[in-house]
Length: 246
Ligand SMILES: Cc1cc2nc3c(=O)[nH]c(=O)nc-3n(C[C@H](O)[C@H](O)[C@H](O)COP(=O)(O)OP(=O)(O)OC[C@H]3O[C@@H](n4cnc5c(N)ncnc54)[C@H](O)[C@@H]3O)c2cc1C
Ligand code: FES
Image 1: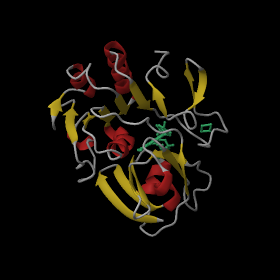
Image 2: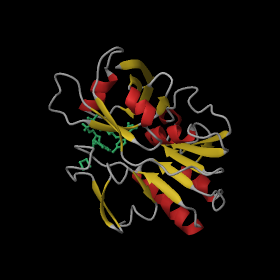
Image 3: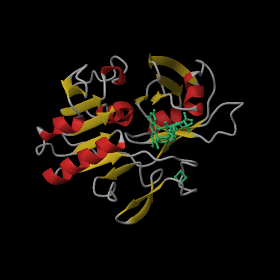
């Protein structure tokens, strides 16, 4: 059941769901499949990272960009309406060592906000976007103990001016591990910097999905070990596993 809806900015929305099983068992980096409501039964379910989880309230929330028919429908959901969501699905991030760097590009913030909230050890989040209006984190979510947040925009309208990769140049090597999610070009640039600096890194990657449970092979990506399904072996992969064919 939808318990809360927040219109964050034009084209961005947060939906909270009462989902006791998912809220009780999910770990950061996992995702859910959202099945579209009545009238849209022909639509395949859509994958979304878990953004926040509240075990006491048995709720999870999703932060999403409105892109097409499915996300338009989700953005028009009413509080109290019933939705089928399945999960938690996929692999999560490995344990986060103290001093880790988290790097989020735009809507890629979703799995990293959950990861950041999973521990209280000191950690740093670089949160980047093209422009200030695309830094769409709802107020309060990143107000976490021992979390340093560095905002960066390409046009300099908020935080530092440049890209997340520009900022990383001054921070690597050093951190024991890096965790990232965002647009492909950003992840590729971050991967290069991590490999050159010897920083272990894990990325949450996106692929179009149909089943979400490993049955259709529609989400397979090539890795050095052969094809891996983003929905089962992923969506979290080590830097060595992904983006090897560029
Ligand atoms: C593991 C995983 C986690 C994700 N987490 C989030 C999240 O937290 N927030 C968020 O906003 N989005 C997330 N996505 C992307 C999200 O699933 C798509 O934006 C969504 O399915 C689009 O549905 P639609 O019906 O609105 O758009 P469609 O009409 O299906 O497509 C509109 C546009 O979105 C692109 N698109 C469709 N499906 C995907 C997909 N699976 N991945 C990337 N692009 C897609 C299409 O190429 C097209 O350009 C995630 C995807 C994956 C695989
Ligand atoms: S979406 Fe079907 S195997 Fe991954």
